[in-house]
Amino acid sequence: MTYIFSAIIIYIFIGLCLYVLQRRILFNTSGHPGSPKSYNLNKIKEINIPTSDGIDLLSWYYIGDKNLPFLVYFHGNSFHIGDRAHRIKKYIDKNWSVLLVSWRGFGGNLGKPSEKNLYEDGNAVLSWISKNTYFENKQIVIYGESLGSGVAVELGTKSKFLSIVLEAPFMSIPEVAQKRYKIFPTKYLVKDKFDNYSKIDKIKSPLLILSGKKDEIVPHQHSIQLLEKAKVNKKGVFIDEAIHNNLYDFGIEKEVIKFNLELWQ
Image 1 (cartoon, helix red, strand yellow):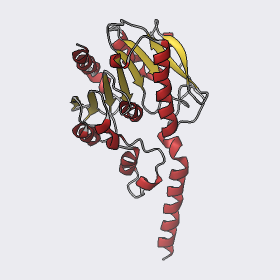
Image 2 (cartoon, helix red, strand yellow):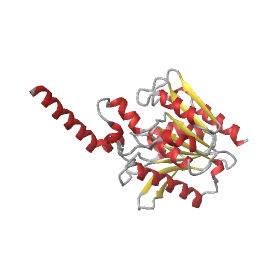
Image 3 (spheres, one colour):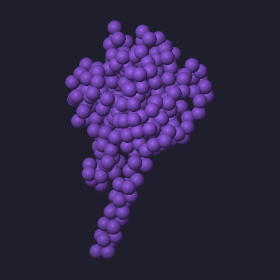
Image 4 (cartoon, rainbow, N blue to C red):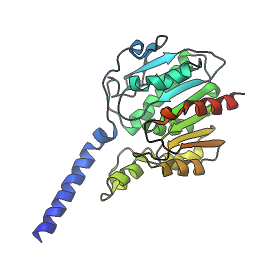
């Protein structure tokens, strides 16, 4: 009886810790990335995008050929925008315009990330583009990597873009958490749900989903189910040997470029 009581106490204690610390676990924030030049991005501008609640989002902006798509890159959890430099360089080398955005709390930015706050960051980015560039929504590719897929899908339900690209997306954060913490009722404990599955059939733009079949963080099945539910012009590119963070080792940017140039024409 004592063992059972002790097990219950331990279970409750661990569950309480997970609940209290969940945002530290979900949002693995990062320090300042340094300058773009240190990543061999010599023509990138450093800009700060203001949000409605007074946060400045450090972002890197490259102005390419106005007759080519404009890629707006929302990064995933962990690391900073410098760790995505090699990714965006592949589009810059094709003279696409690129905006690589750092979330609040990431990349040395002030503020605390949450589902609500990241949606605010996404809205701030679109507002900045509207006020400071010549690009229209029909020229914009909204790219959401992992955590960023939650913001990409949310924005995609409100406006139509050239396309939405989701890399290693999840159905929802509770679904991912349930895989990791099987013995806890994550459906009721997770604060920031980012429920992509309930929204994916409401997006207005063509959809490209990229996923590694050996993804060790977000099960590949999430991408399959999201793709099946979406109602727009859609395509899935699934790499047999890829895991969560190495899709660019397989030249996945070629699929992004091909998909969008076909839409562009």
